[in-house]
Image 1 (cartoon, rainbow, N blue to C red):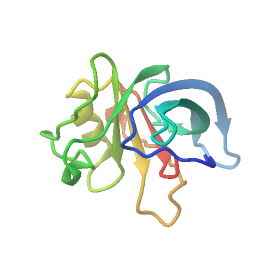
Image 2 (tube, helix red, strand yellow):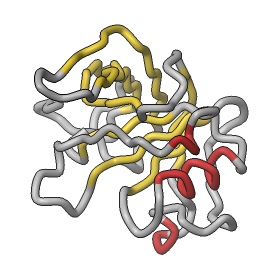
Image 3 (tube, rainbow, N blue to C red):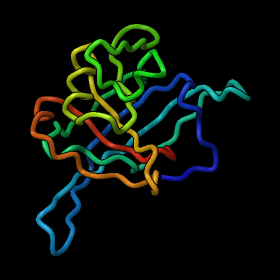
Image 4 (tube, rainbow, N blue to C red):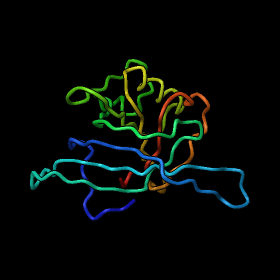
Length: 157
């Protein structure tokens, strides 16, 4: 999940999630699905539309594993970046499908997902920030996300 040029999270971006492969870890009962992520954004320096593809996402254990498309939207207020409060507001640009981009931490994945889906997000991306390895992803195992689509990505993405 590393690129020579990392777009700023504040850039206008569209995101597409796609399930392609199933991976197994030996000597462990855990199975996970990689989320292939396509990011399209306007480069703030050149004003060119750019697209990057990466395998940095990991679907939640009980998450729906299907394609999702939409504009990324973070919680509107910086203090709500974790989306732990049901009143967290998201302000996606334009109309139509949007994907919530939420920082890991401060509450359960279930709360984050429910709060975003309650605001009509079509999918949720939780990014790992504040850990010793920001590129680390885990398989979110909360059965509360069974009706929703969510992935975790490393912060470097």
